[in-house]
Image (cartoon, rainbow, N blue to C red):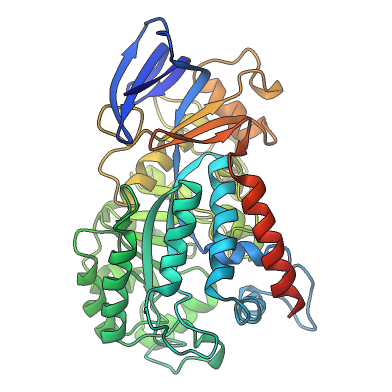
Length: 453
């Protein structure tokens, strides 16, 4: 048993002072309030539960900044995809592992303690299956093990290039599986997770573009009790193509044709009408919002205010990993609402006027559900995933309670996360991952090779 003591901590019941947290085997075993530290306790100032990052494509961390040059025509998500395809053509399993390790180290430094890896880069560069069909997934698991981040692995089913079973493009060859091949992949993924503490496995039909209705019905049972994630309605072109194919908008079609419930996470769901927004909110499914990537790709702004008014559940993700920053994801989520609604403090809830507190609580609850965590927060039985903020950070000086969350999310400009424990293991000290030097050295070698190819 080990123990941590904090001047103040955010518990499921609210803020408390002089908090002592005991943990063993990666789980919180006791929480005491209003007590002094004991000899041997590690002490901190401000404790928060670690946030879930519910949507990541780890390998894309290596191409961050490479798609910021305009081409000969108007740039969009669809032209960005071509840059992504060219980048991944050169990646080996070793490359993917080293890039993922840097991404996961940066997530921990930012206050994310678990990641949902929406993993679709399965095959060799020529499209052939590796001897181990989950070779690439195994490298994701290895990166999670190296860094210590909690992992919910979401192997992606990808079979088509457009609605109605359209043929995939040659550039998508590394993603593709048939149903039998995907079933083998899922089982192989399970084997790679056996050695990882509290790892979860789900499945992810990539999108309604990449899986037919028949395939969708066959894929989802493979999740068992695990989560089911899907991209949906990210771009208006996707909405128009879905209407042309089915006569229905994507979210509407999915709610009508799949058993969407609390196991599901609909990633982006950016372009919904009001009826879809309400239907999705009451379905119990979480929405996976990735405001930094959605802004970077020009996706649009999710109708969060209406969704939250209807009791909708959300979490946040770093998606393309162009910039990994938990506070910035929450800040940009609120700022997008302010810009479109011409109002301030849009996400606040009755009885809790702090915007930062409402955003943080929503992302914690929804992200945990979406990643298959039975419990989240600083409570007995939950994973000992703890983020310590630096009370001496200029933006946090003389703040207490929810004002700490407001200051961290809206004013900290980085550097406020001082230490992080994941499953009771300290993985960040003085704002830096404990193995950052070695991880970064390997990443530099990888990117030098890949970008010179």
